[in-house]
Image (cartoon, rainbow, N blue to C red; front, side, top):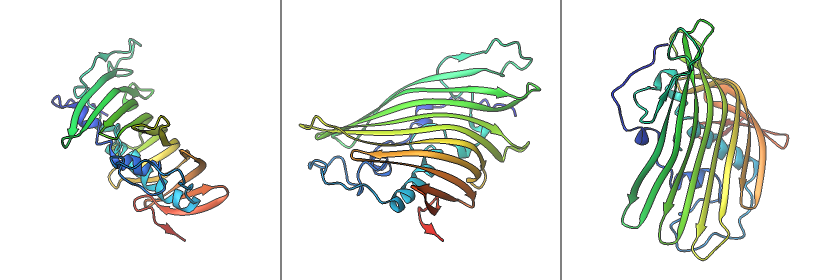
Length: 270
């Protein structure tokens, strides 16, 4: 695998995609999604989602997380998507004596990005993006490790929302053509909404830990592997496991109940 040295681009725009209303919905802060810009405060009578509804929502959330829709790395881009020149921060050699100078080479970028939404919403994204290049026993580049931590703050007249994304992935090419990659690691998504005049924030999130995922990057399909997850809202939490089956399908197990779910649509099948 040879690294791609693209012309320098805006790494902030490449890796900090919109972390606004859709994240609050997908992270299950409320069982029925509503705008956090509303003047009304969150209901205190929200009921925890059913296991079936949770499996469906987690499935779609998971697909978006792995595709980088909430910020950070898009695993569907494969091992050839990382560019040394793309990253604006310092570049570091490992000093490990390898015959390939890129083995152990890493780069980190600080993110500090401000924008607006309409006339009344201010959005700030900050954090860091780090990439480490990995090699096989023959000093040939085989993949990379990504360690990202990004927070986006969305401020309007009635509330302040924070959306935090933390990723730690090790990505490895499984074939010479780089169509298939192996992935291990974790993904943590947290959202906090604080309403004016209410000192108790509304919190929700979901944490995934992935083991031996095999991904077809051309067809954007998780062929095999497993994951465990912990999802929670302000008044509930749930844990479960996922077995990936290919064809965009997975089996979700929550409290000994099995759900066969389409990862793209969230629909249940028999």
